[in-house]
Image (cartoon, rainbow, N blue to C red):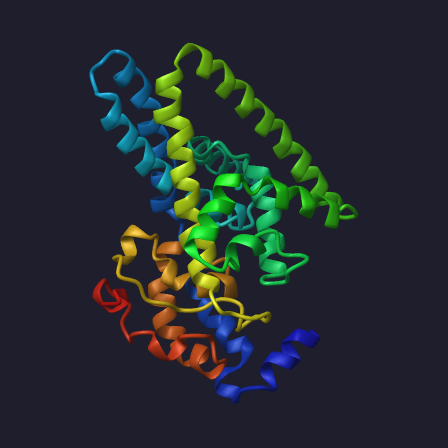
Length: 301
């Protein structure tokens, strides 16, 4: 492919694209039971909050805190499903991608199929202002602007993406499927508002907003600050005051953009081995990647 020739011609043979892919492939095999456990687990915990709060076994304010934590944990398992990282190309296991992807997003009140098709376009056109559905959030000028965009809802940009990719049959099919799920969410939400207004506000609507802001900050904003267009230029390694297990290790998100099939919990070991390749490719921040990706080196004091 022309892309492969262009990539290979820029660096020494020892860091060829083929060798890079061979290293990445080693970390794209394992079954991601952790992600499935987090996805299904947070959804089950969230569902259990409703009877616990309604029967006054748990105070509403405690339920709100737990629901908000669940919402912050909701996107990543779906994100792995969007890339087919549970089925690993096995048609008989694709139901697992769909099941985990849909179930975990209930907490965020967002349709899996819409996120899946738009996320694929985000990968294909990262940082393109006209084609990247996540451009507004990944290229926001500040955290405040990002929060305002998130609170306003990303649906406007997703509708714009629907127009841009109007000739993409697969995109349109997935989007339309997602719209039906979105309408179902709205219907259920409105019914619950009339019957259980406070519980709906503090166990679902508000936690979903908090989870959405959290997701946009760490999945979209921080990984792309100051980056450009290009395979090795559109995502960066960064450090943060927050321990990486509290922001889903999104400091390592750049390797996901390079090799989406690498499982999330296998990224640290993959990055350790790929570090020379990343430096050779001049990935933003690559020089700062520690030789061993552990807890402390990713915390910026």
